[in-house]
Picture 1 (cartoon, rainbow, N blue to C red):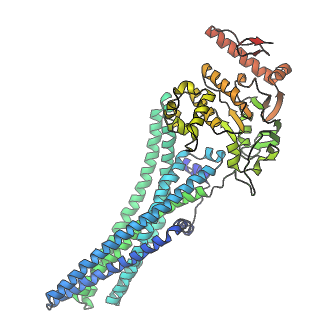
Picture 2 (picture 1 turned 90 degrees about the vertical axis):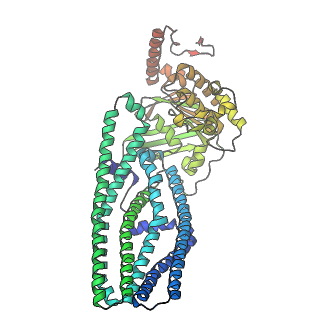
Length: 616
């Protein structure tokens, strides 16, 4: 199984019958049915005019070869031919414009539906889905589906009508010769059927290679800095070469299949022309009838060849549909329960009652966790990596669903609330802050035009972010590169704080927000945290115990269970796990201070005041 096959399983990909794919695709065309109906009428008129033209040529041929004709009659036929050609092109233009408008409207709705569906997926589902594969579905595959709406199905309809109409006229001209041509029709049909079955497998393999290559590019272009740091350019170039070669081979197999099919259809056409001339003379058909039959043969075989090409494009569209619909069929793991209501105003009391949670199977991350955080208080979670600290925060905002127990806010089970309103009431400040390209203002307001500049400025000053933004409000227009690359880690974190404060949540969660930042910026963040505690209930996860010393309650986790709880002073006095962690960090800080020639940290149990002096 290839990497792409393994990744596709994350989307729940399953083979979908062509009939079901077409039925589901046509649902997006339903709102545009009037336009498609008008286009269908224009197609019928266009095909009818195409069928009439050879009859005019046949009439002119008979007049010229018969030796008895008038210029008036000839000019009338020529004029009719020109009028029909002009009408034909006019109908073709109108049909094309109508179809493009209808098709693009349908694709617009589909792309929006896919994006909104991705937004509804849980964090666990999104973490397993490669970004490149999602981008391919939203952008590339919808483009293939656009062809299905605007050209493939329409051209197939046109070609089928042409084949049926032309054969009907051929039967009218000479039913005996038309029956002979039926043998060629059967040969072309059987060949096309076998070809379609074979090429569908080739196209599926090609699409898989394209998706795998897109995923590889998305991941490695995003991580190019790391590739350069570890000098892995040659290795990644080799991987790219391997995936590129796999795509080339898959595409080559498709080209070979068409390289065999098309010449064979052309050979059948030339053979049919020869048979037409032979039997036309043998059956004593007039020169005009033979010429008409010859012209109809071209009009007959060209649509059949076009149908083969459209089968190619139809298979591409069906493969794209399959990938798109499989993504849309992935049910969100976290959904509103029936009767869920908006959370409304929140006091901020949080309670976990015997909560058990595992990401997979019985590999429990939390085991019977129970605690209560009173409204307006600060609770900190400490413990080794993997103890379940961040998981508690993720469960509170329903990024995942628990297997056992209850999580309550103000005495109400959080599953009774809509997911959107729950997350709107909880401000999340994470270790890895993501900033979108744009301006500082657009990142803080999340592009909400209703947020006044005064509120944005107040939030920035509240958390101390104005110290690096400069004069306000001009500093709010400062450009932000993708991911916030032109800001330091600490600056991004302060902007995250400002963004959270601006949206006025009733509950705040802070997950490792002081990790990997310099001491000066940590001081700013600590000052911001002290201010933010007045906003509402705060849950904090931090490896730096200096961040949690002032919490109203500290919970120590180990192996998914609570082993200690209390204030900083109470836990120090117990001399347990928290005391061990604190002493370890204090000794490390003292060693670093000695190396830098600075004063040592405060002794165990001492709490520095605002001036840095130690109070017993």
